[in-house]
Length: 199
Image 1 (spheres, rainbow, N blue to C red):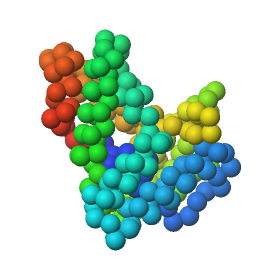
Image 2: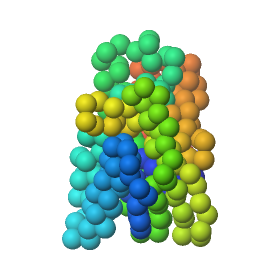
Image 3: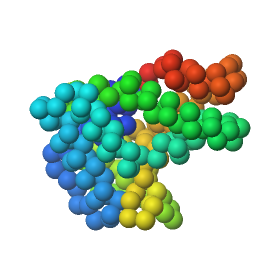
């Protein structure tokens, strides 16, 4: 998965340019449009330092990204073996690693990438897939699916897919190998040390 595109997808939920909005008929689509507009405003606020913009994006993202579910899906079956304390440590370390590795790319990319919401969406119970089209500066287009579930009036994001490639699947193999080699605590230490490969 292209690293800069990965960064843009993860940045709460997308530090991207939305030149025009598709008809946001469903509340999940309306929220995604609001997320995009809000993050764009922060990313383009040149009166703030990069660190301040990253902090504001992170604070906004905390309302909409379910880091616990993202972490559980990224680890896969071994997640059941984690103690509550290990889960807490892993979630915090994974979030910090993602922000550290990709925040700069996401803010830089915000000036060059265009995104529009697509009118299509799918649903299954309280789970929804909202789709967008991402266009790079070179004109290449990608489809991004944001996977959400509803909690009251809010739709929480628990996964992304870029042209069918799932964010949680991208990291699952790495975590699986780390757990085999270093155990759970060793894996948490590796994530804290940001020793995973960038995707």
